[in-house]
Amino acid sequence: MNPGDLGGRLESLLAGDLAAWQGLPDIVVHDLEALFGDPVESSSVRVGAYSAQRLEFRAGKGRRTLVAFARDERVFMVEVLPPPDRNALAGLPEPTAVLPQEIAVEGAYAHEVLHAERGLLLTMAQRFEEPEPRSLVRCRGIRPLVDRRALGPELYMPLETDVKW
Image (cartoon, rainbow, N blue to C red; front, top):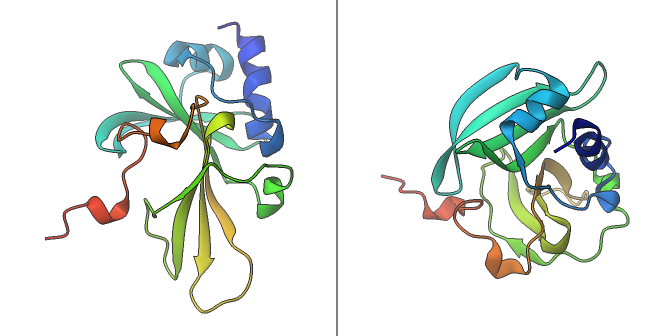
């Protein structure tokens, strides 16, 4: 994909404008390297039920970091660090699904919020015993999905399915 076109597609996520995000295009790792340069960090992680390559790209001074997750050089998910604040949720429609937590957040229950048609998978944390609003603790962009059933184990695995002993 042309770096200029890709930069335009990623800009809304990097800027925290979630209402403008239209989903992750079909890209490979080389496309991100052409846009941002070499990753500043690379590691192997588990995403959903499978291993993946995690690549961190600096989007520029004073900008959010873009983290890409890839399998076989195909980027299947991106995340922005730090996530936008909860005001970024303004303008989003009702979520397609609210799913059980995938990660542990100390002192809070963190559930996953899927906006399938927009290609957004958000982690919202509700602090225990506090009435204040939920906070956005993880913001990930994926390809748009037809519906909730299209979110499979390659992208999401509830925490409760992990073997604990």
